[in-house]
Amino acid sequence: MFISLFGAVESGVIYAIMALGVYLSFRVLDFPDLTVDGSFVTGAAVGAISITNGAPPILATLLALLAGFLTGSITGILNTKGKINPLLSGILMMIALYSINLRILGRPTLSLIRESTLFKNLEPIWDATGIDQAINGFIGLMGVERFPDTWVVLIFMIIVTVLIKFLTDYFLKTEVGLALRATGDNERMIRSLSANTDTLTIAGLGISNGLVALSGALVAQYGGFADVNMGIGMIVIGLASVIIGEALFGTKNIARTTLAVIGGAIVYRIVVTLALRVDFLKTGDMKLITALLVIVALIAPKIITASKENRRRQRKKIALNKKTEEV
Image (tube, rainbow, N blue to C red; front, side):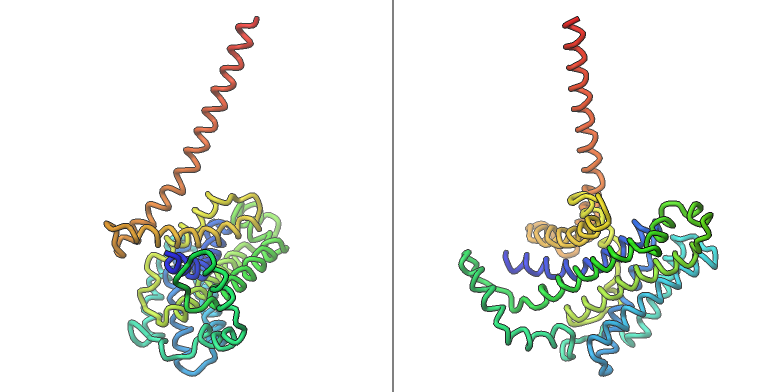
């Protein structure tokens, strides 16, 4: 059980970067961007093909980030300059990216098992620190018998994801970030203040898909392969992470919301992992589980709010009746 939960948290932290990208497009810009399913694979494909051609893993990962930014920007251009419906812009780009990603990979699946990846390069340095032995020894005192092969991926990705979270928080509080948030809230109003909403939308979608592609590149290096179909349903997973996080942890301010998105991505992976351990559920049921999670996350807060409102009305009614009786 511990190993399964560890794997869920480990992958959840990597996918949290993708969820932050989805948060920027869907929540901040209020743009239903379906490019995500394609840009996730673009990041994986660019990162994988760069590594297999001898590029350093860190450079390959940054190239994937740039490729994602370009795909998101094109979606923004189709919408703002081409006057194409936001939803249709994302769909068209997603469809186009399938062929583009296949061209980049040169085949449906590209293995990275024998290649030098970002995580593999970190392992020798990490092993020399002896941190794995210290953590496993501490956990062993709690009765855990099986330990992860290494903690380097989890700890490194926590640092990277938290860094991206803080950079996102800082960006959204800058003048450009505030204009971006205002564009999502009320585009006409911000345009009346002489802000270039087209440029803001293009930049916002570029940053969003850049984060998605970055996550795709890291997932490819983590899993040891890049596949042209690995992005199918990624937008649903991203939305599930955002919705679950907001429902569980709240959205009081930007810093709390971005933290909630990261938490939502981890919780989503944990719930899916636990659900797949149930005997009658299979791996193929993952999409169904995701859909049910999103439905529960959307409906539960409304039911809770309605219940609280009913109780408040009942208390008010009882207090009013008591006053009437006293009179």
